[in-house]
Image (cartoon, rainbow, N blue to C red):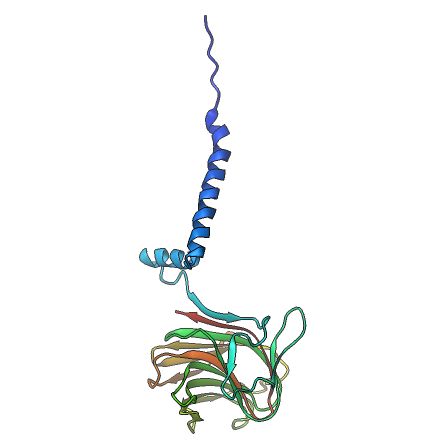
Length: 240
């Protein structure tokens, strides 16, 4: 009787199929990248299409200051007081007198979250711009959340800017908790802009809520004033 031997060719083919699929996927990703399409954006669109709206946020801007001020512009046309630290994990630091403002080259939007790691070693604080822009005269308009130990004994405040001037008084303000340490502590600050409502958090704790409908969109940035000494890292703008 003739005997037949059967071999399992399925097991032998799986590695080849896996390599082929991987090669095709890498080729497609490479082509999409050359065309300027982000694979993460496609994933997010698919996720939103099946109801996963909270799966992905869109990164509008990020800077860890490894390139210094390449991604920023000074509204005073003077970057001399802003210096990146010279180490493996650089920060952007402000050392000087007066008032200076930086806007990010990118990150414009409407509803988004601006976040930054920041530390002040002296002076009266710093501000995070959101929904900010320049008018036809190069003057800033928009909002700031201000980490402000110099305001009425130390408060978190929100200000509106019109034609280069911050309006007085702030449209939102709240004192810090008793015994709060303002200086020489790195804090993670987030400002959430959602419609006409703004929420600020420090180290994950909500510290201030403000509301205003003057500006519907704009970019993000930083400010320091009154001989402030502050350092910043991981500046991020992420849309909702």
